[in-house]
Image 1: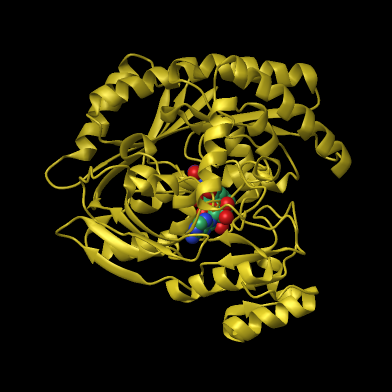
Image 2 (image 1 turned 90 degrees about the horizontal axis):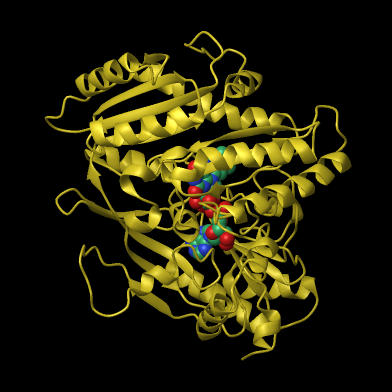
Length: 481
Ligand SMILES: Cc1cc2nc3c(=O)[nH]c(=O)nc-3n(C[C@H](O)[C@H](O)[C@H](O)COP(=O)(O)OP(=O)(O)OC[C@H]3O[C@@H](n4cnc5c(N)ncnc54)[C@H](O)[C@@H]3O)c2cc1C
């Protein structure tokens, strides 16, 4: 190995000399967007940002960083919410952004599959696939910015999980550059392949700690051109869960989204989008945004109408509206998206991404909100999420006018309070966002010795020098030495 280590300036010069200036950014201003998290809560720095154009470029970057003793933080669209994609040690780490690797290699409508570079933006990928009459079901609020390699690395969820599964269930194969610079070529499109261990699974949800994903082959379905979207008012979260169970049975697995929202959703959405149309009058205790969809000969509109007739007759749903155009459906989804933006506008707040079993979800929310209001009486809890997956975002908003210090104090306390309730329900502190650096301590506190031992063994086997994404998920420094 050539020892090229030296000052930051020397390391930057060496990276440019070895990789070429086209691939390397070193100016602080240019690097800022790669070193700041999506909410703008944390700003870091880096030795450099490397932006490869090909798998070979990624291999060269891995070799150069090894030689220089630098660590690599892989990055897709930088929409991750747990600080996994931005450096935490600016004097020893580079960001490796996949943004220029955005080629769609192949879309095969006969095989129901596509092979794409890891840097493809999810929304662009979905559009290109839709043009061929096919559908890639992964759907999340960040889809205009997040990239498929990031989605795979976080095993992203989103609104369609209840029907199509998490990203893991949509991945057929992966191409990955390993920490030693070699390429794991697992870009198969086979549906069935039981030749020993399924190694691609190691990299799904690894948050860039085991390899750099450079390409992905994904499973497609026919485009669901019949979609019915409804916003429904209910008397409680309990009723929302009963409604979900009934919809699963009555709609024959054609339900593709079922999102729960509290009444505050409308206020928050309007704070972010003052012109937003809210089609339901009244202030009900709970709301559900529901979508059923299908292709071919299935009459989706008829199914939605008959389903709603039944549940309204039984007074499970007390008010509701069905979108009659794509624009109206889009407007309904804007309420859900605006609610997120509205919370961000109110300033720093505590965000969670919790899952518990569906049958315990309503009790969990009641318990956790009660615990928060007892510990932090001046804060407001907002619980919403992908109810069908038992996934709730129980967020805590400090009072308007609180200083940043007062906010952080409340965020810290709220997290501790909520995590105790999560543990009581045997739930997960990360249903879909991953661990990153933000949740590492909470994750490590809850790791059994056996699980920790397995994680260390896997990391040691693939990345003994801790080249990739150090301090992300778990801090392995002590275990390796
Ligand atoms: C408004 C909003 C809504 C969201 N909604 C959801 C949601 O509903 N469901 C959900 O699951 N998430 C959601 N997220 C979180 C985020 O969008 C997902 O985690 C997404 O999958 C991250 O993709 P990315 O390309 O932005 O990854 P990044 O943020 O760039 O990186 C995420 C992690 O993956 C690693 N990584 C990225 N690319 C690669 C690669 N090619 N190889 C190896 N490692 C890599 C990074 O090092 C980091 O650890 C939301 C975020 C926002 C801002």
